[in-house]
Length: 166
Image 1 (cartoon, rainbow, N blue to C red):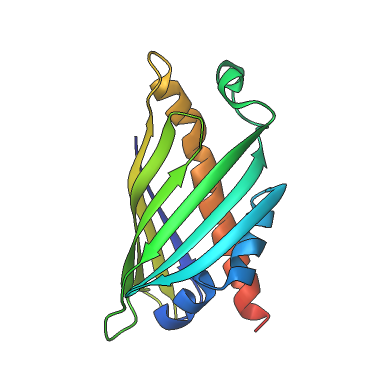
Image 2 (cartoon, rainbow, N blue to C red; image 1 turned 90 degrees about the horizontal axis):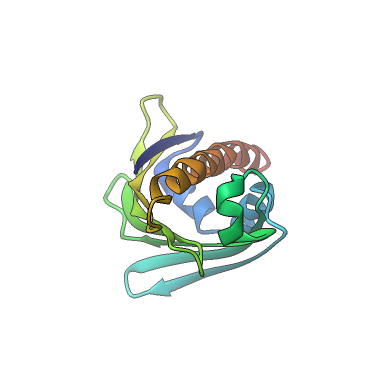
């Protein structure tokens, strides 16, 4: 299932990247997504900046047919591998979301681009959600996709609050 979501950050791409790679910001966005606990890592690997979050989320909202696979909580591991910026601060990253122990994953990319409005940045997430479960895969994808969209909406709210406080 293809997923494309856009978040508009109220600052330029340079400041947006700085925010997205700040461990304190990442912890806040994990908590806001409903995480019961989280770990965050930000590492430099050559020219790449890699942000990894691991968070446990309640499985509320997971349809009953999928609950047998999930249990009361699910672990979400997110890895974003940012490349170098161009002269305008725009950049791209490879993104993976995994649910260890479950045959569900999202792979794709995210891009920071100057927004249509002056002083904004569009962060576009685009990729494929796959649930490799015979007969139920498509239904599981349809159940998980809204959670990814909700996490992106939370990202927009948290970034506005974060930037307004600085």
